[in-house]
Image (cartoon, rainbow, N blue to C red; front, top):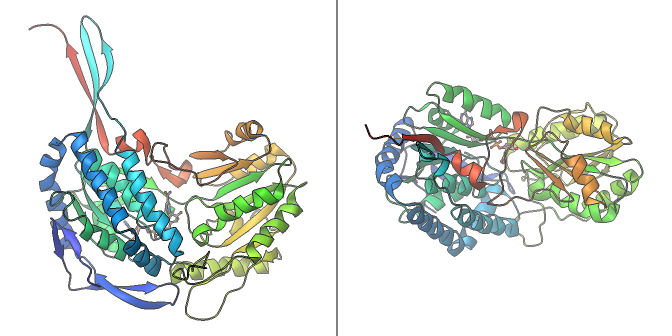
Length: 470
Ligand code: NAD
């Protein structure tokens, strides 16, 4: 397959290449171009040149283009999903879902109305709040859900009248480049540019004087670097960063029912989800039953190559992350915690770890304190509700959390005390185009989706009229 950057509506190659590994085999299966600084400059220039005309289009016209983009996602869903599974590792059904979801979320966001708000209108004055696009938005994405996490920021930037330069993770550049190729005729040249490259390309984007805002999804550590680099030009930033989501299971639940839902919320995409459940706190009265039910789910999990339709859980996406999770697994073993299920690391080329459930683990262990971002989840015991809220909140992360109970209102009262951007009741990972999503504390700055997410791509402008002829 041929891969190219999309710069100013043209397919562009580079002298340097990135090697892309299939995580199910650990072997390079494709190469794609790796952009240099001059190519980034060209992409930024093209985006700047396209901005005045694109900004002048109506919301309705831009929404129509976004709907065409969603149609392209659907039309090419199967081919994109096959490529996504090969580079990312996730089961093919979940790749199809990711692409379908990218389409529906884009359509949903492009249906949100952003009008002029009237703050005052009386006999003497009228004060209005307008929203203006910022200019060029740089979009930087991670490797865990490259298409979904590109579609949201693309839609938010373009629908609100900005142009964009999109850079995928060097671990998963292919599906994003393919998307750029498919969208070549959907937007006018320069409105959407796609450039693949290394981490250095992300840094150049964050520093670039021609880029007005960075929409970044990735780790906390890199998010901080982006913010520091962006400070030089006082760029706007939206940072969607990591999480260490707690799920609190109260004493009145049916542990078998909750275990099924929690298992999926913890292990989907082999735990490589920002808002996966990463710590489970269970009341002492349901602790053993919940542990048993989770272990039962884990023991039946089918782990393998995502292209096999029987596979439920694919590999860890890259060697760096695989080795990090193995270190946490080893640390957990050595700590004396009980591994109830999983913990096996098959030999062979792929980066596989079976879904692993850990009980009786210390609160200050790495597995509990850090974002594991892999298929190993601790189950901790609590007796007192105030104490469990304190423990859930005792972290610098604040992405999301959930409370599970037979009585949803009882759970809702507790959920509201979690220091997170989203607190769910009897569910986890439920997001939509019209509901804001983002992190509290070090899990991020700003929100994606919804009217809040769209306005992050715009500058508020007051137009204040004194109704006096002069
Ligand atoms: P990462 O931070 O290593 O990389 C993310 C992107 O940043 C990549 O494109 C990378 O090339 C680029 N990058 C690296 N160094 C850079 C620099 N100095 N300046 C600018 N860009 C740079 O993250 P990852 O390992 O790809 O992704 C996993 C992380 O992403 C996890 O922490 C996960 O929780 C988080 N995540 C958050 C959300 C969310 O919505 N909050 C969603 C998905 C993933």
